[in-house]
Image 1: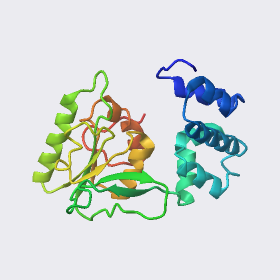
Image 2: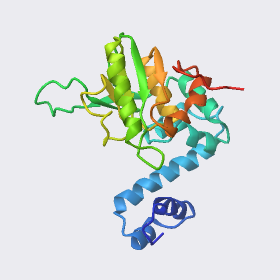
Image 3: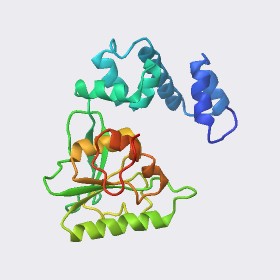
Image 4: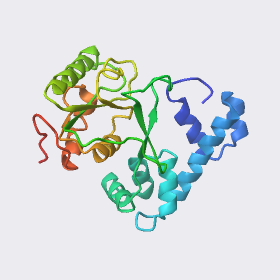
Length: 241
C-alpha cells in the first residue's frame, strides 16, 4: 500500500475493509484525508448492501448505492445474486440514470454536440430525438490490440450513416479520439463501455441499430450480453447457444 502502483487504490480499500483507520491510511499513503474518507463511505455502503438479499433490499439503499457509483455487477456480488436480477429489480423500481450535458462551447455560443454523461439525479438533459438513429460503440481507452484504426472505422461509420439519413450516436469514454470530436457524431455519450452503461444509453435513445464491431475487442465483448438483452445489433448477430 505504501508503494505507488496501478493496484494501490484497491490495496487501500482492502486495508480500510480490514479495519485500518483512516488516519493510518493517510499516514502511510499521504493521500488527502478527504479522499480516504470518501473510500470509507463507499465501504459503509458495501456493508449495508451485504446485510440484504435482493428481495429485502430497500428502495432508498439501492438508489443511494447507484448515486454513489456502484454498478449493478458490484451490487449483485454483494447481494450474492447475478447482474441480470439486479438490473431487472432496479428497472422495476424505476431507478434509472439521467444524463447531464457538458457545454462544449462554454456558453459562448450554441453547442450542437454537447457531451452527455450519466448520473442518478432527477432532471434529464439528454432530450433524445425521434429521428432514425444508430448507436456506434467506440473502443474506449487505447490498449494493445486497439489503436487508431478502430477510431477511424467509427468516424467513417458516422459519416456514412449521416449520408444515409441516420442520426449518429457515439458512445465512448476516450476524449483523445476523433470519434469524440464535436463535429463527428450527432450525439456523444461519454460513458464507460460496460454492458450496464451501454444498455442505459440504448434505453434512453431507443436506436434503430447498434454497431459493436468497429471499436475493437472492448465493444465486441459486449455483443453477447447486448443481444441477450434484446439490443438491435447490426451486422453478424452473436450466437446465444
